[in-house]
Amino acid sequence: MWIPRLIEPILRQRMDTRPVVVLTGARQTGKTSLVRRLFPEYEYVSLDLPSEAEQAELDPARFIQRHPMPLVVDEVQYAPRLLRHLKQVVDAHRATPGQFLLTGSQPFEVMAGVTESLAGRAEVLQLSVLSYAEILQSLP
Ligand SMILES: Nc1ncnc2c1ncn2[C@@H]1O[C@H](COP(=O)(O)OP(=O)(O)O)[C@@H](O)[C@H]1O
Ligand SMILES: [Mg+2]
Image (cartoon, rainbow, N blue to C red):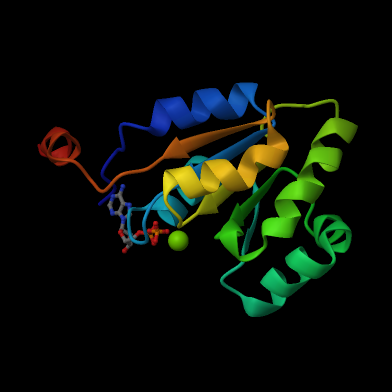
């Protein structure tokens, strides 16, 4: 059973207006489930896979070539160099909204710092654990 998250309309709205959106939150808060559910048409890659993380970090240009946009990159903290590279990619596409949706399992402050290189292009949103309100709302 899917429990609707309060952040869903906010995440959609940001994806409609920002080239890059970063969803942070501790493990098991529901990041992967949420992005896959809301954006099923997006190409998806998780950097939990060591081979993908390695290429994203060492050869970000090739990594981007292999994964067409719009793209979800899950667990992006494993390739901080990819973020610096994304700025050029995003600007080359004239800052079209919704190009990249990234998730990270680090605290909001850390992710916000890591995405500084994407200033003005990325917005960082925080996913918290399921709230009492969300659970209540999903009950019949
Ligand atoms: N909105 C939701 N409704 C119901 N179950 C959910 C929801 N979000 C996540 N889950 C469940 O919680 C667990 C953790 O979710 P996951 O997306 O893997 O979290 P994360 O990617 O943040 O580690 C999974 O078993 C998933 O099926
Ligand atoms: Mg996940």
